[in-house]
Structure formats: C-alpha cells, structure tokens
Image (tube, rainbow, N blue to C red; front, side):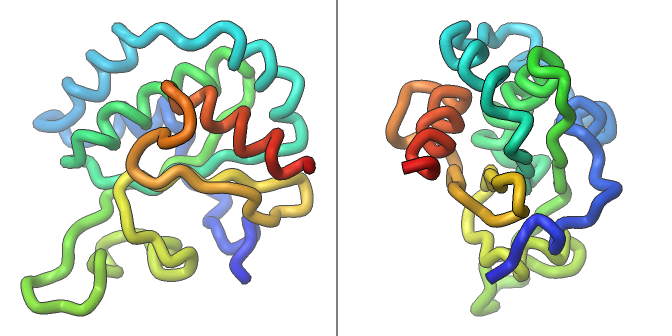
Length: 157
C-alpha cells in the first residue's frame, strides 16, 4: 500500500499552488479563498490534531470542485501554521483510454494512489499511512475542514 513517502517532498503548499495556477483559472481559486469562512470549531480541533497528520491534495486546475477545495486547504494551512502538499495539473487522458487521468502530465502520484476524482484529499498519520481521503467534496459533513476532523477522529478508533 502506498504511503506518504510516495509523495514528492518538494510539492508546493496549497497557497503556493494557487499562485502557480495559470491565470485563466487562478481567479476562481482566489475568489473562493477570499470569500470562504472556515468553521471555527473544526479549526480548534485541527490545531490540536495536525501535529500528527499530513494533508495532500491532488487536483485539476480546470476542475470546479478543486476551485472549492484547494482554497479551503490554503486557508487551513495558514490558520494551523502547517503547510499541506498540493499536486496540481491533473489532465484527462485521450478519448478511449482505460485510465481516469493521463500520467504524465498528471502527477505520478495519481497512479500510485489510484486517484479517480479531482480533487482528492489524502490524509496521512504520523507513520505516513493513509487514514482517509476525500474524493471530490465532503460527503459526511457540510465542510471540508469538518470532514478532515471526522476522518482523523474515526482513524483513532
């Protein structure tokens, strides 16, 4: 099973990844980041939990769900004081391919972790083992930050 060690170590933070997105897509990411209000209860819990966890997001620059998720993670990393890793540039393969994503130019981690959706947020524990993932959007809670808290808390049971 792949672990955090299979993620490139020099991946940009979420905030840096937004700044590196080509201008034709960057505006939507910046608007979401500037308008989004983080859930204060989730932030309080994450500040206590994140020393032992690492967040990685894989995303497509053109993806609407990525435009909603990546800015939230950028705000989280700033609020918590811990950078997350962001791997962007995912692209679809040619028509007729049996793959979900074209690797390359999509990051190699797309195949390593069996990524089928953009974005996918991976959560790793202190040993580098994946303890949860969010595919496309939060499913069990109203927000991404609450979903991360839930996945981490569930992993401790």
